[in-house]
Length: 143
Image 1 (cartoon, one colour):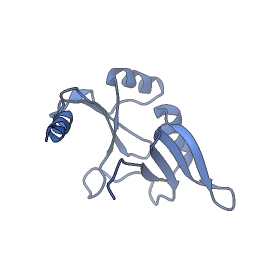
Image 2 (tube, helix red, strand yellow):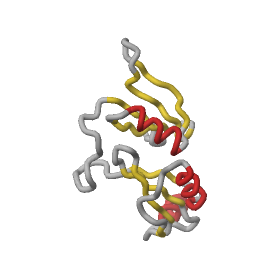
Image 3 (cartoon, helix red, strand yellow):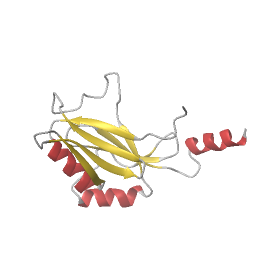
Image 4 (cartoon, one colour):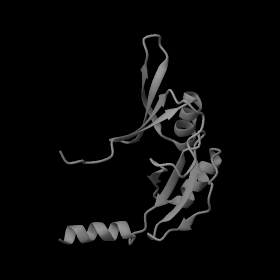
């Protein structure tokens, strides 16, 4: 079965309310639904990134902060942004400051970083029309 897209990313969180506020109210993802236990407690929140990509926030983290950069496993995730300057201003107005300045990477794209309340590192990337990713896609299509 070929993969068609990344459907969702799941974060196990310590403070579901704080993380939901960050991703819903500050980042701007729309809350789609909640899954509840028999006792009525929410254990998972689905947040819409696109129509077929979601961020799931799930209760049950054993620690309150993500591991520091270095251990094996996922080190960060990236959101593609149309206009990084506009997004920086919008996030700043929502109380989220960049942890790095906006820079142009070796791939040709502009990027900056933020962290969520539990320390997960999030890359924000504005794709350049001639970035190495788009060059590689064009080369694949030319074959």
